[in-house]
Amino acid sequence: MTRPVARIGILTGGGDCPGLNAVIRAVAKAALSGGIEVMGVEDGYLGLIDDRIRPLAYADVSDILTRGGTILGSCNKANPADFALRVGDQWVRRDVTDQVVEHYGAAQLDALVVIGGDGTMSGAAHLMTRGLRIVGVPKTIDNDLWASDITFGHDTAVATATDALDKVHTTASSHHRVMVVELMGRYAGWLALNAGVASGADVILLPEIPFSLEKVVATCVDRSKRGRRFTIVAAGEGATPIGGARFVDRLDPNSPDPIRLGGVARFVADNVEKMSGLECRSMVLGHIQRGGTPTARDRVLATRFGFAAFELLTKGRFGEVVVEQKGAIRSVPIPEVAGKTRTVPRDHDMVGAARSVGTSFGD
Ligand code: F6P
Figure 1: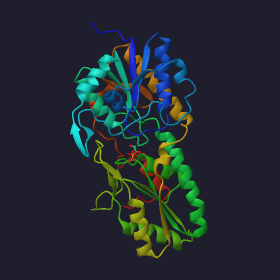
Figure 2: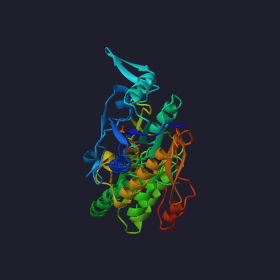
Figure 3: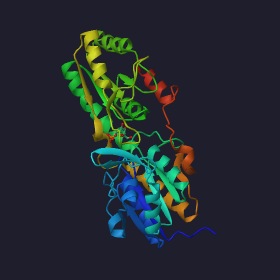
Figure 4: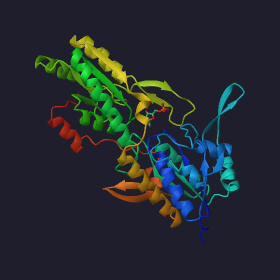
């Protein structure tokens, strides 16, 4: 017979995003109201490795709905199966899964809610093979989790990026410049596409549609000739020139995904200036996109996801991750989403809509 759930743990893993606290609140309040004890695991899987697990009371999860970040802390480096450990002046990699299993058992957790992206779900799939009972909740500003039409955090990031692009618009217009703004999103272009469409960017560069510098230059020059003496380029950080490679800003060898993208905006701005004679500036919006208070939409989605996760727990449906599909909340097996990326289809209607109002994708 399945062991009933009397005590759960909650952790937030990977890069943070607005709405994490709203999920923690939803899961914890539902559980505590139902007489289930709640333990907060600090800093994602790192807290399970280091045994930093503390009780969460109702007061701890009150008044956090609108707060950005995560009250539990997060970490995008702690993969229990391949954990980077400092020994003397060297980094060595170890499988610390046994430690995680021991601490999960010692904390007398009956189940664990993991709130995270693809890396966190891969970690969950691994821990499930060692007997941990896990329910997943997808988060990421990138909106790239497989099987979910939307992840919370994305809407807020789109709003932040759109606001930035709107502001860049006015100064671009005053100085008659080409402004290239680099947006996050890793290997998926959802953030650049949504913010680009929302702000009426003239060029949108996506990882899914390799671009030609000549085409970007042609758009800028053509606008200039037509008296539109400025151009706004919204560039996803994973965008690549045709036949070229992704722009890598730095490598973080201790992270399960060591690549940190960056540099495409500078590359485009420098080359467009050289090739067209138009004055260009580039900027990287960076982690601002992960900060701030969640939008109303993200608060609602996070609350729905949190409640759905609680329901999976009480029904004993472990090993599943909550998703949104066609507006309905559903769940799918965690191993089904682990390690996969949901990218923008080249024929997505939003790409067509953007093209129809004159936006170039540089292709
Ligand atoms: O996955 C979320 C994300 O913000 C990506 O859009 C970005 O490429 C990456 O994380 C940045 O990671 P870090 O916080 O380690 O710099």
